[in-house]
Length: 226
Image (tube, rainbow, N blue to C red; front, top):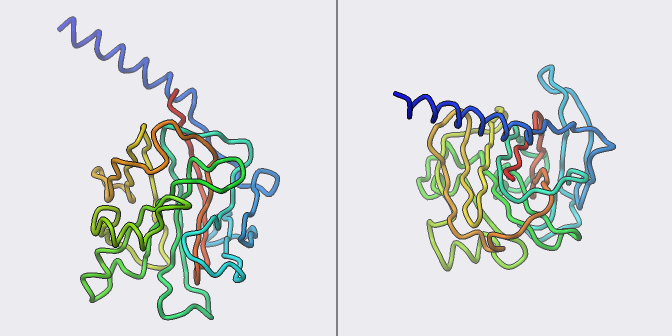
């Protein structure tokens, strides 16, 4: 009984300490930097949101196309944000509503880790497309096509999702591991055990979109583990 009490006290203390480092990020213009994307501030379904669209001159995929949060250094912890994506009117048939989070971004945006979703795939009639609903990649050397070719199925996964609906993405990062949780699911939808930039990498956080996407973000929260 005494051990249980002591454990409960210690656990509560650890949670309170962890929460000291919890931070709700203000998604305001003076706190954000657009990198190879266009950014605007709107209201959607009564909520204040950041709208992000990839710059059309960036032809390559899985590039540094995100809105970066200013003065935020992240290594281990939790990133949580609500995302919603739509297809642009001129989107190609291969557009998937790509939207997600880049993290551990270095100073000049030349290296980072990223997890994103493809909402159109979540309810596709093609099972292979469904299996590609979620993606991890590492910039610049490990984009989705290389990972899919060299390690099929290891860095992609399925989850139920659709365009035009709010989806909560929660990424839990520790060392070389990252787990992606969607909505209120207690189990991760994707686990990556070998982040390509290594366990000691730290850096910024970015709101990521790719080709053909009209992306919306709100309610960004970050817990940094010390």
